[in-house]
Image (cartoon, rainbow, N blue to C red; front, side, top):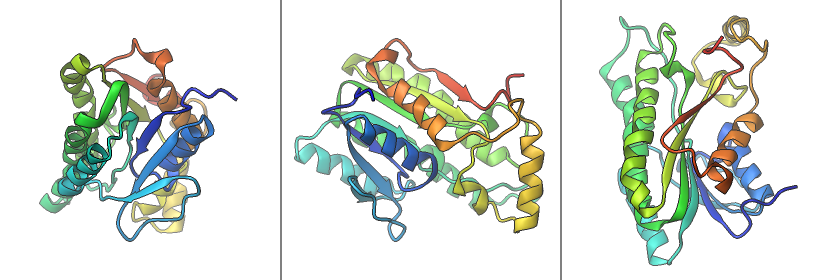
Length: 244
């Protein structure tokens, strides 16, 4: 077992389930001290993690977290901005409320979290944003979600340009379909969910959904010194769905 993160402190938002939990566990297995965030009231016991209550859309909470870390003299070596939401609606049915909630969580929250953490980023720190291949494909009913994820791809470039002088870099990992609890939150009944999952799987050249651990491995690669020459870019991990 390699230990690329021994003595390092990392932050994973939305780190108590799915891709976030898999990534937090992977960092922990390689020696990192891991801080994970979870929505207030949705926290779960996570052995060995430092748990912080934070809603991804809560700008004031993000600023409080940054101030708390700064006051304690702590620095972050890696940040995985993973927490987000996915609700789909057609152009005809989409509401302004859905737009606001999605962008507040997926884009605005990410931007102001990074702003709040900027003073506590260690030299050489890596920030990885959790994107989505929905930003690259024209999937019906996903316009709002896809647009919020496309914003993260842009942020990886512009924020890298701003943070490079202090030695930090930003990249994106964009997963394709991954077997996580998120699919159970799309509002479908069990039978419809099975049908939708089968339809999606048929579009993946590898013929299967990805695993949270596979995405976590990419996040750790982007967070490690071995990827120090990768800046402001996007790695797509989708089993070939958007590529072939």
